[in-house]
Image 1 (cartoon, chains in turn brown, orange):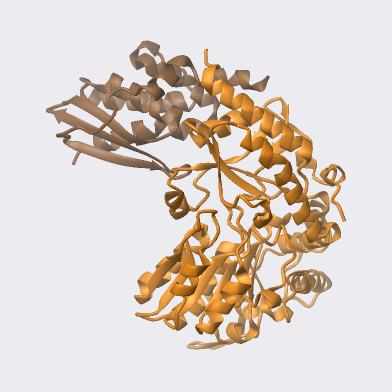
Image 2 (cartoon, rainbow over the protein chains, first blue to last red):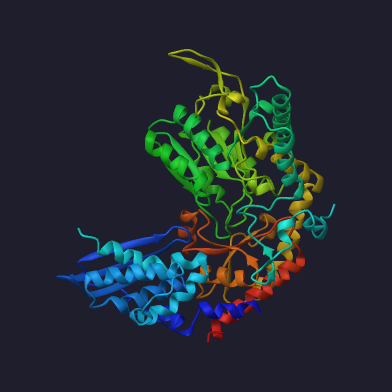
Length: 143
Length: 412
């Protein structure tokens, strides 16, 4: 049956992140917060960060979204906590390339988010996976 | 007359393909309908035999193109039962049609303190033009809400439409809920209050016979692409007396009478609104789409949609955790059904159905205020048309069951 293909997209790790997202909910004292909207489906994700000098001391997200967008946001927060701004920007860039279909040189840098590579084979869902990453990219823009 | 969907399908080459290794089931006709061969052939043949600019040349091809193009205007007039073909303006689609009314009639007739009444179930195309008009003029924009059964609250409509109301803008059929609205009754309320009624017919014209005079609509807008015609075609019907008073929205070639260095005059209806070279090939395709729909009989098309819904409805009700939005009375609907499965995001459901070869729409359907009213971020929408079969309905239900089970326990 054709649904077997779905298993490539909805891997257990992805579904776990979506049902029990990490770093979900508001932060009390963010230094930056960016809300982004996926205009095609109405999903909304807010990413909050607490920047300390040149690194991300804390990061959280909230909002409503599909399995892919929630899982991706959750995986991203795991990955970004403690990274420097420069490292975070590099990861965002590399993730964007991976979503466009290129294979990353060092898969291990992505942690759980590596599981999202299959999203690149579902073109209509790439926007779901990149929403949180785009919000973080905005949050890291110099004021 | 009963539709023979199996036979009709032969006219739509796109439907006989596999998607993700499954036979395609196209349930997204409310977004855009597929095109029959006759329409595709007409477009091709126009370019092969008659291509020329309309209303300009004296040569034979120009005359041929012009008469083919203008013949569609008369065909369209008959199709919606307008009194006069000069009341049929060709546009790029319903969105353009509605914007023209807001921009031309609206800006000339609405002022601060006036009121515009629309409904909470409007597509953004029949919402934002009025919102912009209200902002520009200082008029109030008021909304008719829904009854518990997803129909327009006509008591609220009667309260809201007052002698301050200048415009009542309402969709004939909801693109999300499928609700068929009582246009005649709303037109009466509008006219008693001295207002005009603007009807968005994009979801109605493909499915049922339309008589703009019987409805007493002042303006009636629709798109070609939802009724088997090419994209980029559309119609604005307006009562002649109103169109006569209105200024064109765009200016340029074709719509002029005399042009001087400092001033110009406009040509007569309907051409004073139609500036620039129009979508000639698409409009000729629209004419063939009208022939096709007339041949099938639009009452039969509506009844076919009803039959499919009657088959679908009880099966959907047996799926636990499935919520259907809009009227529970199928007779109040076109072939459109929006729903959600408990705990599943519409996007995930739509991707899963796509793997089964089934094309549905997931999202807010360009109706964000309605989504807020229903208190959901988005829905899944399946929309049926004349080429869908009862077997497709059954396969759709079986796939929905499989999708639900997959997300409940099918993960690796």
